[in-house]
Length: 118
Image 1 (tube, rainbow, N blue to C red):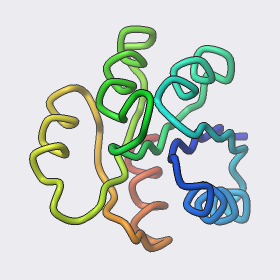
Image 2: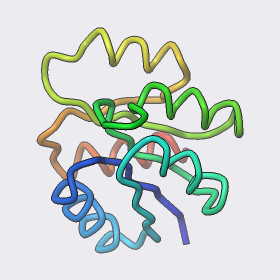
Image 3: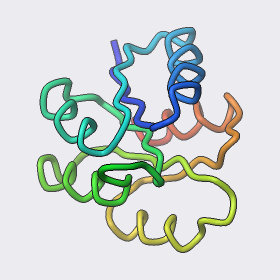
């Protein structure tokens, strides 16, 4: 089963995303911030990560960089609000494969995952 880690400080967004992914046959783990994401990545070794950019403790950009140090082949897509183009560009330069804009729709998220996993 394909493992996806959902990282977002908003519990509602994690719940919504997890529900959609589980319904589509994925095994899902959740983290509420970048610190949790980096620790959980090492333990869970997901096939794909969907990570919010703006979070407390450690933001998505810092977590992306840490995860890429652990696993240079990590597949990470950033989740962002409208108007964060500069952060999205930095994330892509730092190794993110793609991005999804909130509020996201199922087709876009599933398309991003399928593209990342080949």
